[in-house]
Amino acid sequence: MRPREKLAKLGAEGLNDHELLAIILGNGTRDTSALELANQLLGTYSSLRHLQEKSIEELQQIKGIGQAKAVTIKAALEIGRRIAIDGETRFLIRSPEDVQEYADAVLVPEMRDYDREHFMVLYLDRKGGVITQESVSVGGLHSSIVHPREVFKTAVKRSAASIILAHNHPSGDPAPSRQDIEITRRLIEAGRIMGIEIIDHVIIGENIYCSFKEKGLI
Image (cartoon, rainbow, N blue to C red; front, side, top):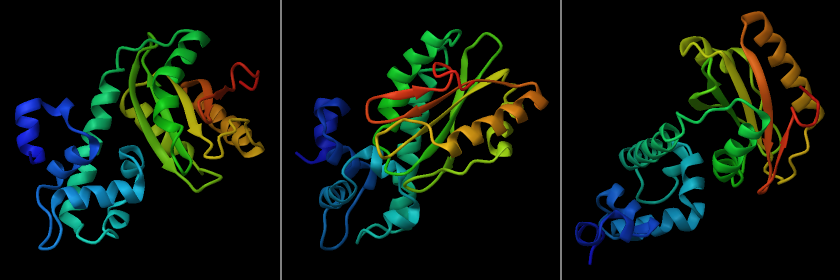
């Protein structure tokens, strides 16, 4: 069965990643089917998570992927990401144990496989509920430069009372660098001026993480 027919008969859960991606692509080219294009994409980028990281320009490096298909892929993966985040909007963070639970359930699975540093921010309401989680910066293999305005823009817009910082180390080692510590201190100071507390900074490694709060760095 073709992917569309298979989904209609078995449901979306009955399809693998390649087949779902083929449906998103819609059609192939004169010489390549949509499923073959999907195989090329996932063969090049290894997983949907890695595919999500790629820019529209990077996706267009695959023969047969034009701007329209690249935009459609980005939109579909972004919808999936937002649905996943919406599922966590009622997650309450009121203690270090809650931070640990959120890191284990959300941050580690989402960020451990990134091949570049992503700087995430969790925005919390006054009761500790997660309002939203946003990626505010994507850096290189070894560093992610973030500016306070990028971190606090959404905090002001969404009336967040506090925030939690998180970023990954592609090396797999979550030990904070000197730059990590300096950036955190700068953001804490900016938060004090604005009346927005930074509760913790979590660095994600390979299935492990480091909490600044637990290390006494905050």
